[in-house]
Image 1 (tube, rainbow, N blue to C red):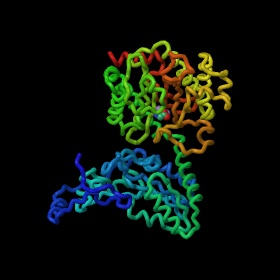
Image 2: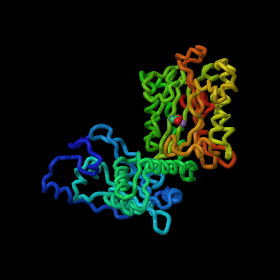
Image 3: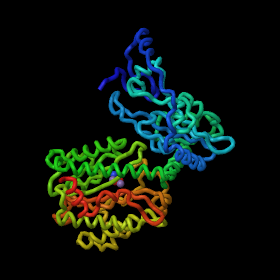
Image 4: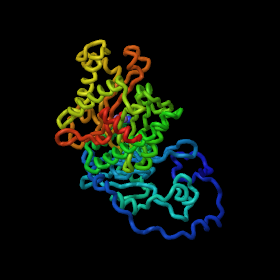
Length: 502
Ligand code: GLY
Ligand code: MN
Ligand code: MN
């Protein structure tokens, strides 16, 4: 790749020139001239713009009179002068409708209005003219290096939000600071949080850090809770993410033979899925778990550097994130050579039965945590039948027992959306203890994991890990399995694999 001169940029220097190469007056005049005029037609309004407007209104209703500061976040250094690909903070994406690669350093502010309600303003660094040094010499932001950014008018046309230059932000935050409470998403952008802290302390009000933290935490909670029930557009995006993910799993099966002959076969699987994710979507929604044999018993196995052996299972947990940044989260556990052994099938069937019990339990009015209870009740009974539990199944299922968690240590479900573990800051009464409502999207993902060195289980079970994970949307009467097109039953998995391999 082309490297720029220049060193690590400090937060305070954002937008300044990373390249220190001096340029002559003659060069500056020459490079600023001779370019075709820019496209003058404004881009179309984003399909999510109306939904984002409704979301902003609902958020504003919860914080009448307060100024809400929602940063997209900065570019993040990967090493030296190389940044990670930019992904905006999920709350920013949700409230603007912007997705892939948009818009580093931008800040959405909901300003309280005297007459009630809020006015949204999107502050960002607009496209620089070709007569600026940024145009040709700034390796981090310059059009020559990273492509053109939008103008204020363009982003306004796409989002329907009034846009202003980022340089106006400090004054906008400080305005009426004596009367207006500021709330910020503190982890999104340290430099913006520092601006908010400065505005708070210049307000003349007694500022107590604990109160400010509690106010920011209430904003984070509200942002999470705003996403618990998805609108129609979000459900459609999640369907697209799941469909692309299913295509990615098919690609994995096509490459399984190559994977089983490769010294790092798990990487072949990871790569096959990643290529599909990048072609069809923005990329992966989280690091792919490609876990063959005993690796499947390590819940977050993302090293993916192991062999993939015939006769073993491979657990693949992967999701495509589409350009709007909604992600799927799907797991299948596949027999490497296309056929389950008897013992693998026995474990697989127990997990499938647990998942089916969770599917049957999930409907409006049932509490979120009861879906988990339905799944682990099946697993505890199966483990007891197999003689693995030191107590009876019912005793294990009491809060004082829980011995089954040795082999199923995680939850059965989590909300899914812009974040793979979406809505994580929602209050317990709005999440775990809440009743399911139509439009909620979550996973059902029971598993059983018998580690190779677990002496409490018979040798034939050791080194077997199975998880089956589907993504569901709550309907008026139950749930719809968004990932139903990806086979789950062991016979169907075998038939599907055979169809792709021959
Ligand atoms: N892939 C992360 C999870 O299943 O929760
Ligand atoms: Mn998963
Ligand atoms: Mn999951």
